[in-house]
Image (tube, rainbow over all chains, first blue to last red; front, side, top):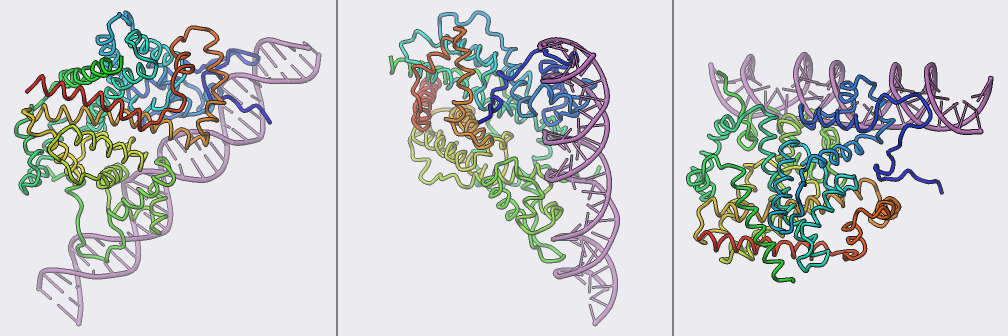
Length: 239
Length: 239
DNA sequence: ACTTGATGTGTACAGCGTACATGACTGGAC
DNA sequence: GTCCAGTCATGTACGCTGTACACATCAAGT
């Protein structure tokens, strides 16, 4: 039975060996891919375009990464390195978890495409660091490791859900080239027609009564506070 | 200035007019696309394959839907129609919101690919129904419409975050053909090596102390309960 | 000096979304 | 009854994608 290559990229990254000196490595490829995704959107990321940016042939990339699948994992872990975790754990779980949530949200705003990646758990160095720091923030509360993971994951899963929805609207604006006002102008007649049929009382209230241009930061904080209240209740119940 | 076609698909769906009798319509295309996504995964969904299933030419589809972009929106709204909302609102918000969350999760399990769609808000008939029912569940609590939306969205955003992560792991198993045990066997050596360096105390605790094969249903209920506790606190604070 | 393995490249293939031109068809106007 | 305008389905074609494979090139180990 032959040794299959390990499926974990992080165990497969090798240094310079025999052969021509490298003019490329996985870190540089990852950086170029991230820049491309940031500038032109995630759908524009292709092996050919990355190679073009680096002035190499597309196939050169395959000497350093297994394929596009691997590249996404490298990209994801690389941006996790941008998380600012200085000063936590501070000793009080609530501001720390809030900080983790805000940092996660900030990261999604800086790189809107990460919402499309990073579903499966990753073993990269920055993911490891994030996990360690995150669990440290909820340690010492009298919970076992499963309870700690519940606290952390609940906050972060809410955050991910919030941000993905938030950015979905931004993304469609970027792709269609319509800003929100133009979108409203286009959808307006259709919505008006729907409302005229009178079967959508809550949609009507949303349009008439809801805050017109809610500050996403404020909305996030409001909802995050509720989630954190829930975590506090969970701690009380289980410790 | 010419009338641009409305960007809302739902306003663009037309009935039979003059010309040859239709052998195709958007609903049939949507059904075929959903079946294909369920059976072969979302990445296998292509205009050509859908057309093949329907024994039509690929270009025939474009007579009925604007393009692949539109198709995803049609698919998303179609599966929303499978949500079982009978009996809600019941009059008590907490079981109702829990029900909405569980139904949302059930839907993601039935069609794992919907995690990749449905980011932007949709105006389809089933999305409208879901919004109306959802807001009705959190009405009468003394909150304004923004507060109601906070309650509902927080629960559902958490749910989406949870399910997307949950299904990310399932998806990678489907794609790689490795079950979880095989995955563990493959990653085991790498993880063991990481742990030996001794800098990852919480990863170590996760492996040693955490429940080995946690029931995802139980975990979801545990975390959902915390989120609902948070919503209850939010209601108290604001009413 | 010779072998061995790594590096980068060029070519090629199968697949994708969809623009465009063409022909078949039918409801409404005359 | 005739004609035509508009709709439906199709075939061809273009540019794009990920990547398998064969190849020349170069440096380190023997």
